[in-house]
Length: 148
Image (cartoon, rainbow, N blue to C red; front, side):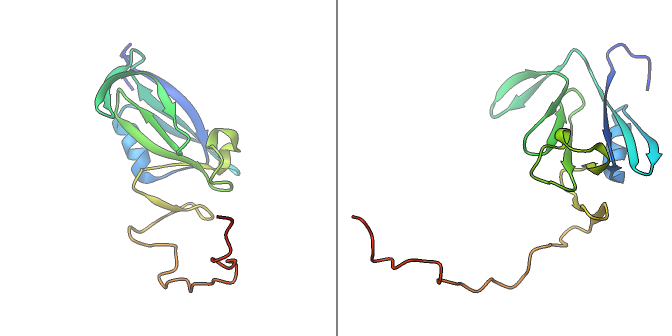
């Protein structure tokens, strides 16, 4: 990290950072530091330009600055272009910033993780069954019985 006044670090704490995410973070001038092993805690410093940057979003130019946390489980920073998945391994539908840091992780947007083991799955290693689920109509009422 240089002493460039145009670069600052936004720090967050997680329990896992994939090697791809770590490489992207450090390539952009950020830092990844392991602080503890039990529970595993990793400090991540995301580099960004505090002045912000202009970006294109939905067909129009927008001024963005700092790290943005999205309710889709992503974090983005416009001046470096970094986008990472920031999620929780225990309660995946809960925003990671509301969960215990050692259960949170940072991975690349196209990576898939096994949250129980923090292992990156091979591309195409689907977790859903490949066979179709048989149709069960027992829960449907008589379709001819309607109020109209």
